[in-house]
Length: 483
Image (cartoon, rainbow, N blue to C red; front, side, top):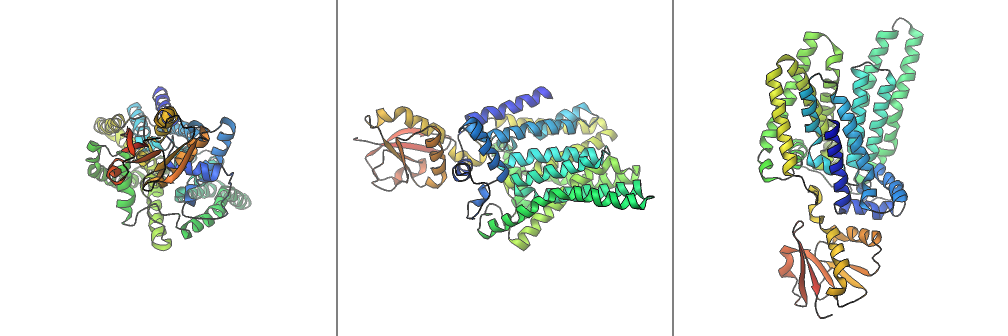
């Protein structure tokens, strides 16, 4: 498993160094990191792009290592290392070696999840911290470690909220579960000594509640973002379609074959959830043991209440349902629930359920293999060629523009998507000779025009000739003749 984890980490590191910057990453760099903004003083439609912990860490890494894609993405790569490490440590609690390996592959070999461990966004950091939190929750609830383990779990989940506000639900539910567990433990242990009983409850509860002070910062920011329409990414149809189905679609990475499996995956999700409820209640009834099923039941409660909170946020505050990447944290929670469910099922009917989990792992492995790439990420595929565009212009500007020292670049229709990316590469590569003029308008005196292949017939400019095709993003570069 160590070797497998090392290969997965190497894959994300290589992609982080090779892949072009995306618009959300470059916007964070240009508007927040470049300007040294620590806290937002004003809010607009783009304010939600500031994932605070990610931005702060980007400021540190770019200060130390300079401006390049790898330094911007380094915090998420470190989060990926932590996710691999603590997911392995948690799964090693299982008895079945086959279940350990299969669960590790299912959890760590999804291409959509891996995208966010190599992008300079807050989602990967948040999910990496959430996995650490879950590991310490397990140690506290199942292995009965001291309450300081519960504090570590809550504290780390509070840090995760700073990376992505979508984990506020996880923070609140996880903290509530651990505090209730701790109160139950104190009641059993100290019920005969009333003085010590009250002292323990007050001190330990204050300690465990202290990380929730992060909400004093987060909640006003969320309300301000919502008021400024910054929380526009999401759905309005309903939780299942907007959150669950969109996440399943993202996890299949838009592969033609894998997309056909989405309905089957939805059925599988429902089966796992229903079976988990049955096994939890049946297990409690049979064994009378709270420890064995405590973590599995915690995972189910976290998932269920996070669902309800998202519904409440939409109905009361108008905050849209989580969608695709904002719902990504549900994936590791659900996979862990499924893994612990199979741990229980394999103990009862080993061969049958071992075969099923192997089959699921093979499916996830195939999904990863057919979607391996070193050129784009799913959510920002349209920008996959920006880095190659700038390199091509840099290498060929003299030949294409008759030795001109300064050249200009415009983007037809898609400027809003590429402007920060191009400004980032201008700064990173010190391209003072490149004048980015923004939107291209008919008869503009620009040297290069970058446009979607579907818009070629809309140029209406015979002085422009084709220069290069960028097939991954379906974009083309045209250069002005007669210089």
